[in-house]
Image (tube, rainbow, N blue to C red; front, side, top):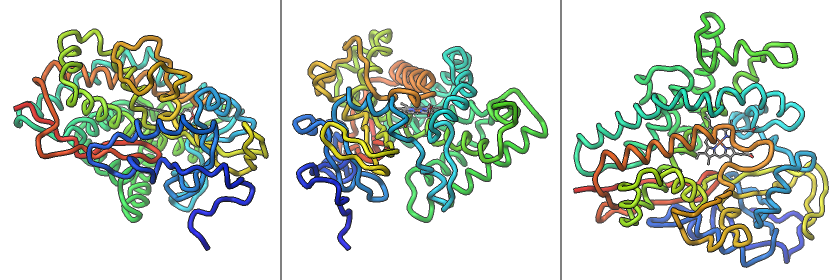
Length: 405
Ligand code: HEM
């Protein structure tokens, strides 16, 4: 059997030679720019079929126009979010909550969780976020004139905020960074092992908080009621796992892409250093230019969409990096303009599943950049090194070694 077959219902002329996993610029590439590499799809049709566009090698329809992506993302009757991504890696079938639930269950859990990551709640977390950024950056400054941004700052910073959110002490940071690394970047052996470890940890934490409630996220979850009943163990797991998975790689990658951009653009770096009040606006433009998430939906029925015969069960990709380079939406989308205003980008998705952690993510990114620029002198990519950027479900960057000697 041929690899990556195109289903019979897909007309051959609708098959596109583009994938977020395998096209040039998507495989780990030194000095690569995978987000810019997606812009080429805007020269083509509004929808095409990519025969290899998921980690497990499945094909998806690819929606290229931002306005069409919004149509898909707000039409949960036609396009489902139910995929059991985490559980299926363990041979199980339960949803991450609320990400993989459809209405009406989605709305029930979304309303339950909204207050936990509301702007007010995030404001209360801010001093801790800043304290953790400062501690990490000061230790980087004390240990020399160069560092690996991802390993030394972006990843431990995101993990430590997750620990803070769950009310866990920071001394477990290294253990969690290890689990998260294995889960998100490990091989076929490390990944399921890390998934089991994280599940066991969530189960254990839930049991502890049931026994001895404190004022934290997990206590709220185990005491919460939906539709007049307590949450089941599976629901508690589904929420715990999602908060772990959703906020680590995404925030770390955003900080990595932002600092890589500033390392390569000394003028912009100087501007933000001398006028830090511009960082909030600049962070929005960097989220537009370097979004990281490919959103996928599953067709619930047969639909003809802009001439494409989508069939029940087909995967439909709404890649935020493609929407954010749509010339119908943004003037000069390939130009990164840190003063760009009215920046209604798609980095956090759209519709009922729009990112629940967006307030927290924004504050983490802005505070990370503020403290980095305030505490370290002008920095650049270390000579003789090249950051390696990659595409996929969550775009990222590794080996980002910067130097300020
Ligand atoms: C720069 C960082 C981040 C980016 C780019 C990002 C992006 C996204 C996107 C695109 C979605 C929509 C997925 C879909 O429609 O299928 C989403 C959903 C979600 N995100 Fe984020 N995210 C980030 C950070 C965070 C953080 C820090 C948290 C929490 C601590 C978080 C929690 C969630 C949750 C719970 C959902 C599911 C919402 C729902 O299904 O109703 N995210 N995120």
